[in-house]
Length: 323
Image (tube, rainbow, N blue to C red; front, side, top):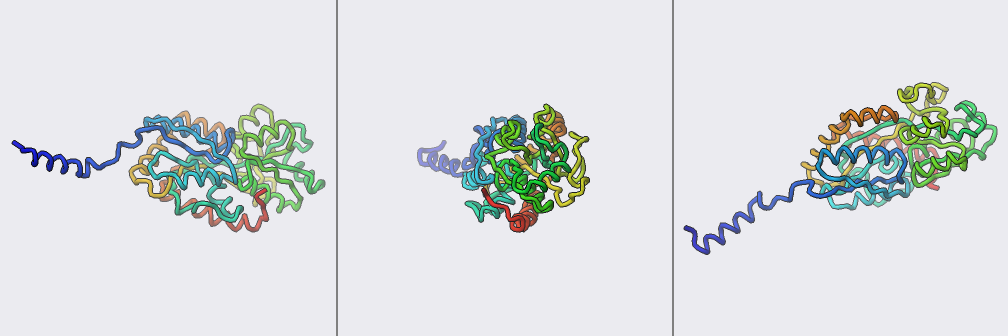
């Protein structure tokens, strides 16, 4: 029989054991998914679909928290500074990690050192859409009109530093015509103004533009993919129209703060892959012209580093400005 001193010693031994010192099971409370763009754009569309099904896999609600600004750098910086406990995720995007840090001359985070990049949930081409009342009805007509009216044609994007901003800047270089960039705090507000005719055309990621194209609210002039999108087989590519330098894709992934425990990273990577195989998600991606990815966290990390190496010189050579 244990005496009082022995009982206290035994209790202390149990309390200090590795099993007793373990953190509570993860996840044990709702998770926040920071989206660095306003509601309504592709980033938000992809984020909400992933959040719904990933939350089911994890057994917790995933709350989408839109934090737009500074070419996706505001929301990205928030996650970089968050506790590495698995309860704050980032919907990582090409702009926030690969383009805007160069465009804005640095930021409050290191795109590689401050994150663990877990997955790529979606990749997709961009599309040039026009208000139905705009006189250019095809991509070639748009190019001709822009050349004939230098400095008078405006195009909207989800914001400075977005891949669509860089696509517009590259088009401007290729056709030697002055285009006026009108940046918004997300694709949703930009599309609203394009539909209203306040801006004649917009470069948008295909998933967020898709429902508006199908509804006839905007005309799709061309996509930036290597090949035509199965979701819109009648819309030509910029490449086939004679502009191979305009091939461009956006991507949307999940990243977490550096030093997040490996078991959380592994769980997220496994469950996100399961989400991307869900029939409803597969169908939705097909409808909006998106494509899932099977990359592992190590492959995603290499991919994003390659994207940084690719886009840094492009940003510098384009002469693009934040405003």
